[in-house]
Length: 208
Image (cartoon, rainbow, N blue to C red):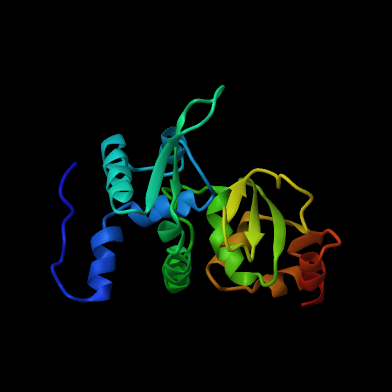
């Protein structure tokens, strides 16, 4: 394991970048906000990262106290990576970075990879309250845990419990919301997002 590089500056921003400033590190955090994940799953959802770089980043993150590695119980018996409490504290950092980066999205390029669950964090920025929201996009399904203080922030596929709200929208709508060109409430009012469910979150979205 290579020694951690440092800016050697007595500045909290520089110290933070010592830990998370390397390429791919924050995107690994984005993926692990979904909960424990296997190396192969991480590699599949981080298109463009080499196996060597991913392995190196995961080792660095474990050394720096951002992640842990553990073996699942049989019959799975695979190793998974998950965020520590310190690692999960990067959620607002990613949210702020995502808000700042909205202006850089523009139209989706032919070479751009996309995963349905990459819309989870932008969606969470638009929701208030507490509960589970299930989302169906053309690219797939995912669910988010609104207001969760511990545990996963989102997950792939249908919600494991009865969600408080279900949203159905097309790619154009979620791209517009992700770029900040349309608010979630406006898209619901315009009929571009279909909301179902009788939970508090569903009612709030319909009444916004």
